Each structure stands twice: as structure tokens, then as C-alpha cells.
Length: 64
Image 1 (tube, rainbow, N blue to C red):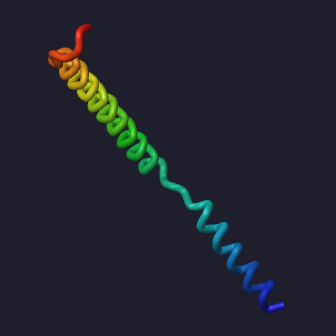
Image 2: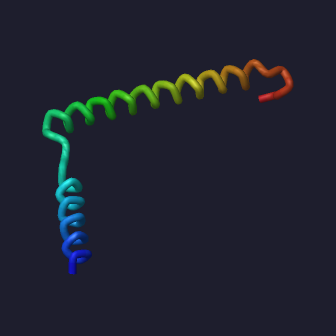
Image 3: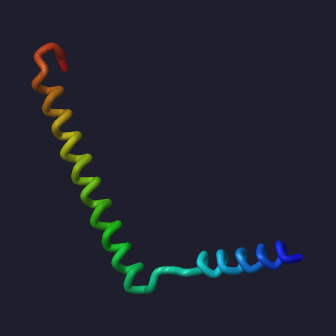
């Protein structure tokens, strides 16, 4: 009987913590950070692709 009560209390506390969410301002900040990092990743990939293309075009062993 005690184990059932203990389990019930522990599940109730766990589920209450699971419903905790970020505030609206935190969500806006996180969205801004995500958008900025996505842009940085795209920029880095573009730079990498340009570098790879440059290396390929400068390789004298490959005839295009």
C-alpha cells in the first residue's frame, strides 16, 4: 500500500515537472537564436562549397 502511494506521488511530481515550459519571451529568444544559427550554418556550407569548387578547379590532374 505504501509503495502504491509513493509511486503515485512520484509520478504526480514527475508529470508536473514535465508540463513546465518556457515563457513567451524565452521562446522568442530561442527562436531568434535558432534562426541566427541556421543562417550561420547555411553561410558556412556555402563557403565550404565555394572552397571545394575552387580546389576542384585548381587541380591540374582533373580535366573538366
